[in-house]
Image (cartoon, rainbow, N blue to C red; front, side, top):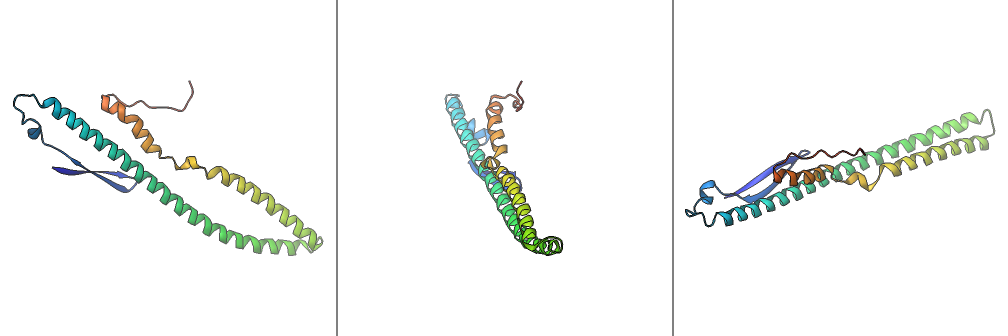
Amino acid sequence: MTTTHRTNVGGVGVGVEAETYTREEHMDDRHGLGELGTLISELSRESTLLVRQEAALARAEMEQKVTQMQKGATELSAGAGLAYLGLGFLCLSLMFLMAYVIPFWASTLIVGGVLLLIGAALISKGKKDVKPGNMTPDRTIQSMRETPDAIRGRAPERRTHHAQ
């Protein structure tokens, strides 16, 4: 009998098909000679299912993160374009306003220098925020760390990042 095991990862449904057997199908061997072989076969199927589910979880999580990054990049681009346009008009207004007090060439140098400093600070912060480490599938890694303990029948250890 084929069943589909489903899990939900951040709103994304993930399905993995696997063969499942009833207890009666496993107990067909009346002498118990094939029970070890059946158990090994079942272990193999369950291990394969586990690996497939972990792969499906990783794939779904990465798809979710890529979609999130695409949406964020689109929003950033649109916002940056509008802000750039608005900033241009404000800078022109500021330069003309300052020209009443100081020469026009000096007002353009002052406004340009301030904008250059602000731009450099934003570029520096943006480089820190856009790192490949932000694309790590954290939940999948945690699940893969807990799986061996669950197979052994132990409660998973909670790993902390604090040095002791």
